[in-house]
Length: 381
Image 1 (cartoon, one colour):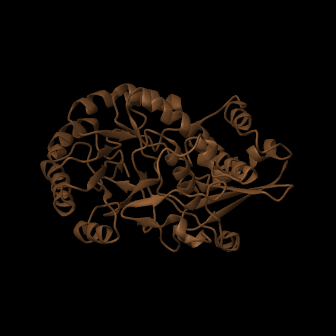
Image 2 (cartoon, helix red, strand yellow):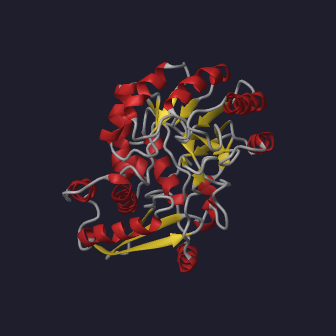
């Protein structure tokens, strides 16, 4: 079997898909994307495709090594995400070629269903009660919310009080039997993280996500030590080497993104590394159906998996949503906050190719907001 063609599709609301075709007619799909930077990732996919065309798609690890390490300049979000989507597609082909779901090729399932969570509140948390209530009615047992909107360089008492009030409200609505994750999105300083985390500890968050910007791992130990709240990070880390400093700092949860951190192959290695530090895997995935499908395949085969993010109904999904590109939405049916194990070959999801090709004709140019402080300086989004 040889790879004969690689295509990319820029699909709303903010995603990029890739399609890898073989001469035997076996096709694999992947999702290589950096949100807000889809175009350079698309170009990187086609550069890597120059190597893959004409080669056996089943030599996944060898191809991963060449694409990741065969260039003198390597890594970073664009190249790692291009590699990630192609890696997903190669695993999809392998599963279809062998007639098995990817989780079977990874050693077989270690669980029968995977717990998922849903977003509430948007970028600047509002209407939490209504949002959480809707998620509970849909059967979810865990939600995640942003801790705050834009934050100043050092938070005021009112800023900090607002975070605590939102977390308290969310806990009141959820009750003690459901879980709440709080995402700081790198918006607060390390000093403010050390102040805020002890104040929300009484509300028992499942984890506090990205309380420190990813380029400042030297600050993580102090933040982790500041409270009993489990700290999570990883959506902007791209390799097992990136995760080592976070794990050494004592984070409880690692959050590699299957569309950023080298795909299925590297995320499996990150999960295994996390076991050494007794950390859990909760893949980042505010993305499309292929990223979610790849994440679930890893989740079903990973012992230290915790919970899976998913984007159905996410506030960024304007004009299109995850299920718009799936031939059979039942594969992503959530029951009591869980999704059942997929048994179809490959990634376990059938893409509606006609819908994808139509969407690509319109494309998108999604960019994340640029926030500013009151004095006009750039703020963390």
